[in-house]
Length: 373
Image (cartoon, rainbow, N blue to C red):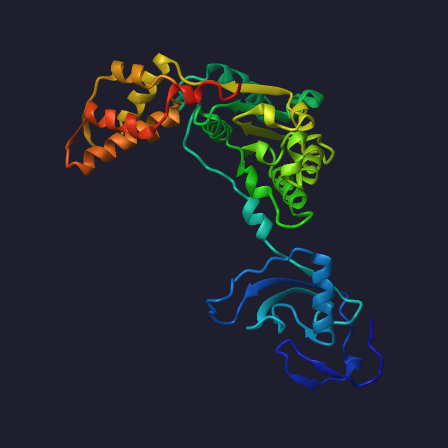
């Protein structure tokens, strides 16, 4: 709309005061901006800002920029932050117009996008996973569905729960699944969805599912899901539990029609999950510790890439490592043994290095047994 006939003092986007005949200017209906940072390096300040309340920011911005001329690709500066923080004008409707008290100001921020846009690419194949035959068989339904989503109709799988001890291959299996199906995998730690302010968590959860839906078919993998979906008996420990649980339930129920999106949650202890969230998982798949034959296969596979020669008694190692997960075998035993050999200027890894690793790992069978009891 046109401004009145009065000549008012108007500022351009470089903040200089000039006289403009407002008969030639319209008031801006909409201005879309994005943060671009400080005009020079200022080490005491973070180069990113966090907008916790977009509506409040709009009032804040409109109050200080009212009367400014806005042109696309030019900049506005927040003079209330020292040094001035810059925003690029992405859209101005109409262009070369004036911000008024009625102008809508929207900000584009990719802060949430960076946190949830975790598309994971991996070279892991299902054949690389030793053991877990039950789990690999059960995820065949996911494979079949994502290959031809339309054929399932109302019988489509939506929510699957992986549970079992740490290091048993839950994350590895979902990476292999996404890799073989060639679909986007949004793999995140549940704790990254916890916000600092009321409403942050629900917003992050919504953004996560929206991105997955926009890039469907896709897989969402929420590791350590119990961190955000605690059983109601633990709500006194975390005040935002209800908000997070309700947001998660909304997305898992498919109210927003997240077609061709599979949600996989992972937890070490399914009994700690909120019962409403747990009930949304139509399938619970257990990941077990490797047996003797599987531990032998895991050791042999990892020794193929060992940078040092080795002289090891593998049958004895299998017995000594009973109760350890695949990850423990690699990270706590073989890797520690390798580092010990190098530290002692050895050119070959021996059982002496393995004994050192076993003692250093401080993992006892009694620690593993009873974790879910």
